Image (tube, rainbow, N blue to C red; front, side, top):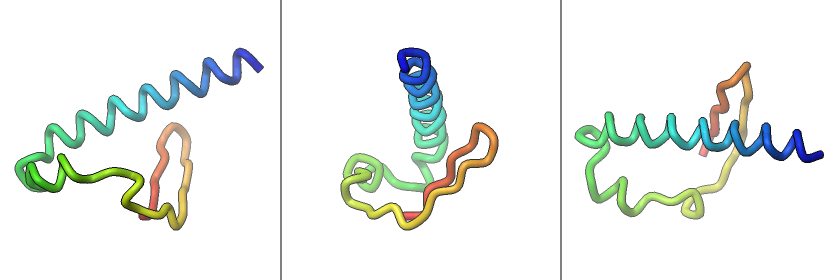
Length: 59
């Protein structure tokens, strides 16, 4: 169980780092106000697809 939790934590950390990198690279296109006010709590996850190490969320 501990290994599963540790692996899951590493996966989440890696995903969050990729998300942060994407947001920083795309900030000009997305707009500062949208980035600062966007939260996953503002959305409903309609579908998720995992393919290898990629996780795609349909919001």
